[in-house]
Image 1: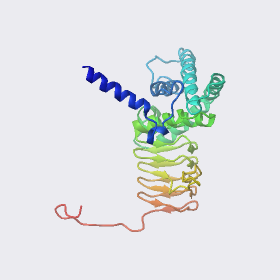
Image 2: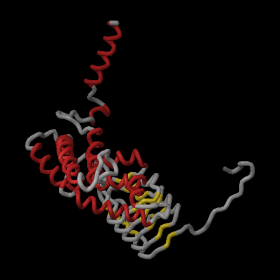
Image 3: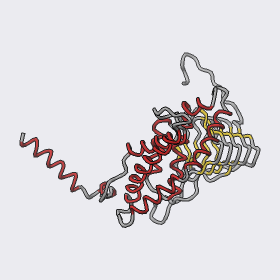
Image 4: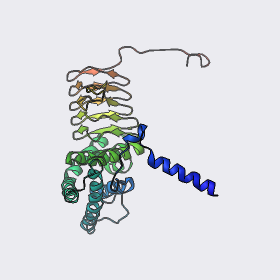
Length: 299
């Protein structure tokens, strides 16, 4: 038994002493770290506030809506203030005046909730209007992964604009893991945005997407490459595409690099696009590839 305990103790000491190799890049925080479970609860509270009765267990009606809205906002303030505090301290390890700053940032974000609700309402309408299979707006809110992803994105984007680190990326990755839709919180997305089906969609950090844009499953709005600084580290410069208003991109197409897709353009399925195109363009595969198989040969 002593040998067993000694072995465990030695392993623990080795881990604590590890200062070389890759371990040297792992920071040693002097305070609490952001808590993913608390952050998930924050997202749920925002959903309760923006879509009363859809995601919570409370009996919401005209008589109780004001009570529950105020209750949820109070809870949101307490949780968000705590997680913003841990987030802004995480990269800095400087606790001076952080409590006051986190409280101010929390209020700033909560003040943005009406605008977030307005934007999400346009997204719900865009998804509903673009899908004959949707029977009503309520079904879109309850069921469609695009709306779940956009709720997290709209929250995360506003937090990022407020100047909060770490927390926005955690929020969008929560949606990514549950929907398969990967939207970086730094992307700029306009009104009436919709994603049909959604699985495998990737939207990079410096993307700029206009109003009334529709994407289908498997679409990548990514970087063709990236520039390096003198130390060989990637520079954070615009490297993802710009999609102007009323662009449609069909399934499994990749639009790469800092190019512009002009307004009212349609990008067909399975397209590799690395050059800008003017407004009202129609980009499709030039030639179909046909093959015949016999008994599975050639697959």
